[in-house]
Image 1 (cartoon, rainbow over the protein chains, first blue to last red):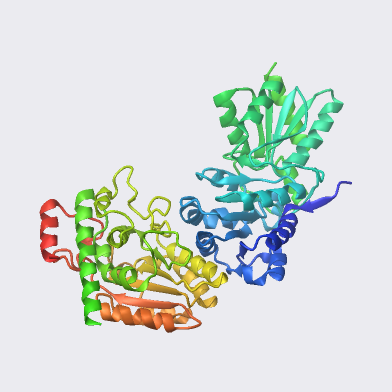
Image 2 (cartoon, rainbow over the protein chains, first blue to last red; image 1 turned 90 degrees about the vertical axis):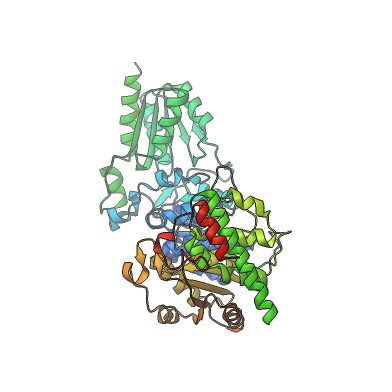
Length: 313
Length: 271
């Protein structure tokens, strides 16, 4: 059994390490520090932690002000409230002046679970991707999360980091190298390219293994940076395989699937199938049940792979 | 004192003349709320704040955030008057390629500390600056200017709560209380009164003044500086369009630029 760690846990731990090394790192939270895991930072560096209360709009613009004085603020809350409630503050107070704010959004996607549709953010990638100058990271596991947090602190400008609530398998080894904007080829293949992000990367790996048993060689590409998208890797995957499946725990509208579709139709059109939430809101349930219900499993990826390969014949 | 006040009055008048001229040239923009804030901005830039036009990013400088960003002309006029850029450049206001955007853009123009214009966000940014500067143990102070219509935004009260909670005594806000917003009198559109009690309840030190009386502005700023453990809100009663006879207290001059003959008349009023 592979070890499972929630990316939000990895965020909390890396934040403490980062805080110890860099005195400019400050953290803001909106009364969710126990859930977003920023409370470890608060315990270690209380003077650099600001609980802003249940007031996300003010938190984001305050983070902008801190950045204007040379701080590196990590503003944390649930993905729903970060990108939904405070969208315009992120747009006008953070992105428009290109301020050095990192938005760490936890509890993204349907795997937030029982809290239901009101709390399941499946539009956040689309919203953040539309903002000029915004870097969008969607880490696949704990190792990738730690690397993404570190990279975010080094980038000059706004960064959105999408994190999850539930435990996900650790897929990367200790030697993993994270380069912003560079997709990671986890498995070579020539029949179909599985381009995945976030928690769907492990599902794509599982799908590729099962497809191999049937003699289908699937390439698996881990896209941890949705923006800027690794156009070269996406086009190269399409060129090598001739068919592409995207997989994300997000709406098929505006997220990874859209980004890949836009890129391929401009540069190298091949048949494409998108695995994601199909223009609907979420609902209450256990994370595993929800992934099944919304068609976000390895089986769904296998089905999409076969469908897209058939189109190519 | 008398000479200092007279000098600041002259600066305010020069700022008002720039406002009228630049708006006449651009053909669009917001004269009413720029003119009402001219005395406050004059005192901040020519008496109170430590800023250096030769080093706009000087670490030890005080910060000013124009939360009511549509009053950009008053800020641009003060910055040009202070020497951050040439007065001729004021004539590029709102034109394609200009550093003087319709609302302040910190990435384009030296001296602008925060990009603003979307109402309700500037106070929060000023709070972040005050927190950041205090964290570094600096002596710098942060000033911000809000509109009276602007405080209808919910975020303002989130920010009011936070500034009180964090006891930000290095933060001073002005509320330009001219009682007119786009759709009419503030108390008719959405009454914000009583403002003194509201800010006080959020943990602020509140001072009420005539926002066109230089001496009162100076005194209020000294009182704010001496106030420990709380941020200060200076509620400044003002007249929208102040100084231009046909603009004073006219709601129509919120977002309309004067025509050439009106510019001429306005400059006569401000002679």
